[in-house]
Amino acid sequence: MHHFHYKKNELHCEEVPLQKIAEEVGTPTYVYSSATFGRHFRVFDAAFQGISHLTCFAMKTNSNIALLRAVSKWGGGVDIVSGGELFRALTAGVPAHRIVYSGVGKTEAEMEYALRSDILLFNVESADELLTLANVAKRIGQRAPVAIRVNPDINPKTHPYISTGLKKSKFGIQIKESLKLYEASKKYDSLIIRGVSCHIGSQITQLKPFIDTVRRLRDFVQLLKQKGFDIQYIDLGGGLGIPYKNETPPSPAQYAGALKKELKDMRITLLLEPGRVIAGNAGILLTRLLYRKKQGNKNFVIVDAAMNDLIRPALYGSYHEILPVKKRGGRKERVNVVGPVCESADFFAENRPLPVLPANELLSIMSAGAYGFTMASNYNSRLRAAEVLVHGNEFYVVRQREEYKDLLKGEHVPKFLV
Ligand code: LLP
Image (cartoon, rainbow, N blue to C red):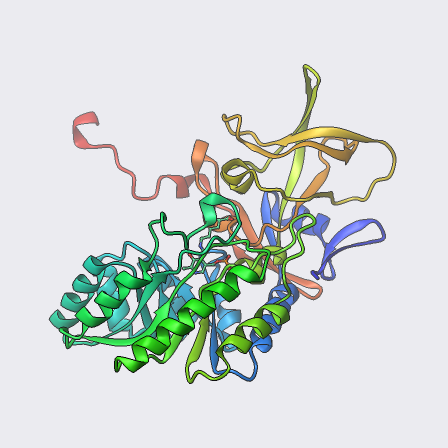
C-alpha cells in the first residue's frame, strides 16, 4: 500500500499533484511520501511487538537526512556502512546507541569515528578487521561492542548481485570459522562480544531462507552462550522484498511472526536492518518526456532522467513500473523508455506497453525510494536530481537540485597547466 494514486486522472503523492511538483521544482525529481514511509516503518516495527527489538533502517537505501530524522523520531535506529553514513545519521539526530555498523571494509579512521561516537554495535566481517578494531579501540582507550557477521550459507533465491549470505560471497564468516574468532576475541580487552549478525541478501520474496537462517543463528548463539559469551543481540540484517511488479513477498507480520516463533525462548534483543521494504515503495522518480524517436522497429521514448539518477534497470535489469502523470486511455504502444546518457544500458523499460504520449508529458517511475538517489552519480556531468518530501497537502524540497558549480567542488587545475 502506498500513497501514489490518481485523483481525477492526475497522479498525486498524498494530496499533492505530481504536476505541481514538476512545475515548481523541475525534473528529474525524486518524490517521497512521508505517509507511506512512516506507515512502512511503523508496520514493520510493530510486527515485532512482544520481543525485545530495535529496527535499524538500512540507510544505504535512502540516506536523506529528513527521512533519517523521521526514523529517529519514531524510535528507530540505522544500519550504516561507512563514515559518511555515520555523519549523516548523527547530523539527522539518530542517537548513537541506535546505530549498528556493517560492511567488509571499515577503515581505521571510520572505526575511530564510530567508537568516539559510541555506537551500539560493530558487525565485524573478518579476522583482520577484528584485530584492527581491537587495536584502534585500545589506542583510544575504548572498548568496542562487537558482533561477528556470520555467513550462514543460505541461498536467498534473489538476483546474484544482491545475494550476500552464500559461502562464495565476500560477506561474513563461515559459522565454523567464526567460532575461532569468538574465541580469539577473548585475548583483547578492548573488545566486548555482544552478538551475532548476518544478512543473506536483498529483495527476498520467500520466508524459508529467513527461517533457515534464524535457525542456524539460534543454534549458534546457544553454543556461544554455553561457551560463556554474553550474547545480547542477534542482528538478522534486512532483505525482505517488495512488489515491483507482481511479486508476492511475505508481509512484515508474516516475516516477524516466523522469526518470533523461532526465537521465543531466547533472551536476546533482536536487531533488524530493513531498507527496501520501508523506503522502496515510498518514493518515485518524476521525469519529463523529451523526445520520441523511431529506430528500426523500435519506439524510443527519451526522458530527462537517466541511469545516473536510477541505475537499477541498467545494473540488475530491474523492473520499475512507469505511470503517466496524466492518466490516458486509448491506444497503447510498446516503447523503450531511455535517458540521455551515452550508454545503451541507459534505459528504464524495454518493450513496455504505454499509452501514446506527447512530448513534455510527465512520467512517474515507481518504486524508486530505495537504492534510487543513494546510487545516483554525476556521470556525463549530469546534475543530481532534487528530492522532495510530501506531507499531506504540503511538499518540501529536502535536497536541492545540484547546480553546475557543484560539479566542480574540490576540483583544481594544477599550476603547471595554468
Ligand atoms: N543490512 C546489510 C548488511 C545489507 O548489506 C543490506 C543491503 C541491508 C541491510 C538492507 O537490505 P534490504 O532490506 O534493503 O533488502 N542496490 C541493490 C541492493 C543491494 C543490497 C545491499 N545490502 C538494489 O538496488 O537492488
